[in-house]
Structure formats: structure tokens, C-alpha cells
Amino acid sequence: MKRILHVVGARPNYMKIAPIVREMAKHANEFAQTLVHTGQHYDDNMSKVFFDELEMPRPDVNLEVGSGSHAEQTAEVMMRFEPVVAQFKPDWVVVPGDVNSTLACALVAVKLGVKVAHVEAGLRSFDRTMPEEINRLLTDQISDLLLTHSPEARENLTHEGVAEEKIHLVGNTMIDTLVRLMPLAEERWPALHSRFRFDQFVLVTLHRPNNVDDRAGLNEIISALNQVSSDVPVLFPVHPRTQQKIAQYEINVSETVRLTEPIGYIDFLALQAHAAIVVTDSGGVQEETTFLGVPCLTVRPNTERPITITTGTNRLVKRNREAIVSAIRSALDRPRNAAASRPELWDGKAAERIVRLFRELD
Image (cartoon, rainbow, N blue to C red; front, side, top):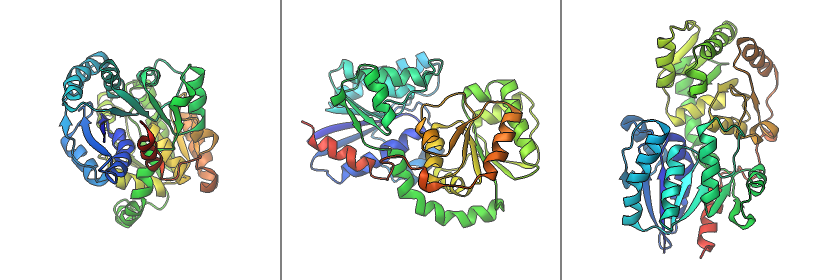
């Protein structure tokens, strides 16, 4: 029996790990699973909803690390994770994504002689000012199994000297979660439509420090949304960090921009599917809109998910009022083409391929 220790640290990690946990549970005679929540991003109410919606078991261990600087958070996760590895003695530690917990837990595992599997390996923005890029680069260098979700990831990894035999194109486990929950999201749409009363709308999500911590940049984005909202409704579920900065900087938000509290994953999925366009700085949203065939504008200078641009519906846009307004209006005029926006193996079966691979490993 293989002992598997899964790590989650932030909300997007749940969507990536949940399908693997569910699929391994079908082979309980082959896998003993332990789920560790580092507590890097943890709100009891939000996380409870997340685990309920994804039908994941509650974590076996919560490290309760909390917030802090990148160095503090990474060091704290490492110190608290090491005794967990010693206690459970896993054969594999599975780390998803690119948050501080990803790198911290991978480092601990490797130093204790435990093999590491990196879910969503090989993504690159080629922007080393992003903390996530450093986490991606270092985690990939020390992992034993690199599970990629797009062809360019293999190119990135082999260019960096990673051995070919470690790399496996398996697809996107986040899309597995989307495919499984989309019917439930559609069931919720009538109630959401009744609540917001929008037939055509722009859906917005912003949380990255580069966008929301900069007064001038955040003002440019909000000004663009104010202008667009005179033509088409704008629905903006506001991340707590973003809400704080809007208030701190005293940025005017038009009454025609509908601000709401953060929305649960399934409801947000329904809103994405029915939006005319999504404006975001989230990596996961770039992927989900690509699968759904919904036009997406990413307010960033780069993306570690270029396949969402070359194959999908995503487009990068400068953090500038005129550029954002022009891009939104242009996207609203273009017809959707969902059939052309699904990358290879984004089919809802990535977890099956991952578990099949683990079953074949020595």
C-alpha cells in the first residue's frame, strides 16, 4: 500500500487536489491518504463551504500557519510540516500549484527522503518578480514526479534540465472539478439570475497585490469598470483585500458596478458560465473561462498559462482605463467559440490518469 500525503494551502489548491483524493479513494486497498491543510490561507467559514461543495474530507491535519511575510510563512510551514511527515511516514507528498506551502512542503519532504509529486508542474510566467514563479521553479527542480496540464510545460521543464522520464502530461485537475460540479452550478443559475437580474453582464474578480495594492493602478481598473457599467452591468464579488484597498484609497465606485461579498465556488462557476465576459487577475479563472468558452481579460503583463491565450479565450490587457474599456467592448462584440477553446486532456479525467500513474509506480 502506498502512503500518500496531500497538501493544500490556499483555496485553488482544493480544486486541484479534490479529484485526486476522490479517485484514490476508489482504490482504498492500494492507497492510504492523509490530507494536510497548512492554514496558509484559512477562513473557517469559507473553507467549510469549500470542503462541503467539493465533497472533500476535512483535513486530517491543520498546521494553522496563518499569514505573514513570504519568508515567515514558508519557514513556519516547514517547521510545522516536518513533524507531520515524521508521524505519517508517507511514500509520496503531493503538492499542487505555486503557493508558499507548495515549496515549503516539497522542501521538507525532499530533505527527509520522501518523494514529491508536483501537480500543475512546468507553468512559467518568466517573471521572477512574482513570488509564485520562484515557488514554481524551485518545486519543479526538487520534485520526483512532474504532472503537467499543458504541452508547453514539458518544454519549460526540459529546457531547465528536468529529466524527461519525470514529466507526465496528465491534464488539468481543476477542470475535473469544474466538469463534476457544472451540473450543480447550472441548477443554481436561475436563483442567481433572479438575484442579480442581469441577462448580459461583465464578471470581475481581482486580488493580486500588483493590482490592488497600487493606488494608481487600482484606480485605473475601477475607472474602466465605472465607464463600462454605463453600457453593460458589472458584477464584482470583492475579495476582502481588494475591498480594503478601495476604501483605503477612497476610490469611487459607480452605483452601476454591483459590489458583492465573495461568492462560493459553485455559484461563481455558474456566473462565469453565463457572463458575457470575465475580467480577472486569477490563474484559475483563466483556465475555467477557457474551458467554458467565455471571453476573459486578464489584467496582468504576463501569464503562466499561455495555453489559455493560444488555444483558449484569454487575452492579456494593460492596467490602463482606456485599454481595459476598449478590450471589454471588443470582446463583447466577438462571438463565442467554445469548441476551439479546450486544450488537450482538459476533459475531466486528469485525476484518473494521475491515479493510474501512481498505481503503476514502484
